[in-house]
Amino acid sequence: MEKFSYEVKHVCKQSGARIGVFHTPHGDIETPVFMPVGTLGTVKGLRPEDLEDMGAQIILSNTYHLFLRPGEDIVKEAGGLHKFMNWNKPILTDSGGFQVFSLAKLNKITDDGVEFSSHISGERLYMTPEKCMQIQNDLGSDIIMAFDECSKPGVTYKYAVSALERTTRWLKRCYDVQKNENQMLFPIVQGNMFKDLRERSLNEVMPYAKCGIAIGGLSVGEPKEVMYDILDFLQPKLPTNMPRYLMGVGSPDCLIEGFARGIDMMDCVLPTRIARNGTAFTRYGKLVVRNAKFARDFSSIEQDCNCYACKNYTRAYIHHLIKSGEMLGAELLSIHNLYHLIKLADKVKEAIKNDRLLDFRDEYMKNYKLSEKGAF
Image (cartoon, rainbow, N blue to C red):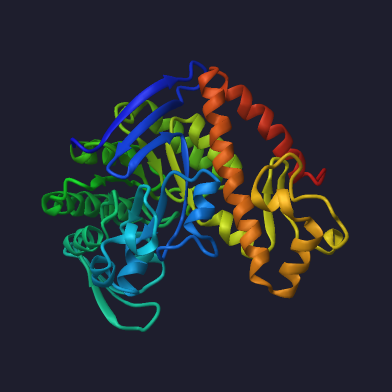
């Protein structure tokens, strides 16, 4: 705990959203923050220098994927993930629980752990809470996530209870073996879309939350309004003395709505994934640069954007790159999309500081929704 602490600097009088500073061994993180995802130890197509230039404060990698390749033993031998990937700021590793349940071919889930087959080689593997902690310890990330069961939307109440109880038992086992003072374990609140289970899960994991807590099992296919309703329910119940992390959320509208509900940290693969498909985020919504109408559009991706892509290249050129299958097109759109979300978090901070986040949200969403109606 001595190496981790969280300071709340200002609370928005309109919304209850916070500006805070999360102190970690690899530097301070000013929240609210959007965190780029580097699943395999790299944000696809980008150098660490690109991420630094756009203002990224922390990135994520994934335990499941790094366990499969190159293997946590190689990362440890290299001196840990920071040295291996040449990133000197904080790193958060997801436990891999979501991937074990969503990507791998499951054989058996028991209270001890999960037996599964690798989605790469088909090799039979076994993941337990203790193994998950050992892998993350070898990776050397600053923030580590507890091994949990993320139940899918639409499961029965009975199954949601079972997954919640298993998550709590696994959390205790994670907590009992995690002894590295350079890492902070975040427990994860589960409970599917059932409010009483969400409250129960929060109460059960709180004794293990020392300087951070995560909300999992949202943005997994349910309507956005359902996610917002769960967040509204949880907001007054969440601890105020530590960062709150909403897992796997990364569209501009969801970022603002999440931050307005007291969330401090969010991440998602969405900005780089849609970039590889030729799509850019803008304040007016998504811009599909691969579409033919942009073949002779010599303006930047977004007017008044100061990212590297917008300062140096046109929509027409990026359209050409995407249609030609050139890697640079996806790289430039990835730079723009991540920059857009990182700077959006900065604008949210400014609105919190001025106690007008809900006004900012309404102004932003008015333009954003216009684009959804075809005005853009």
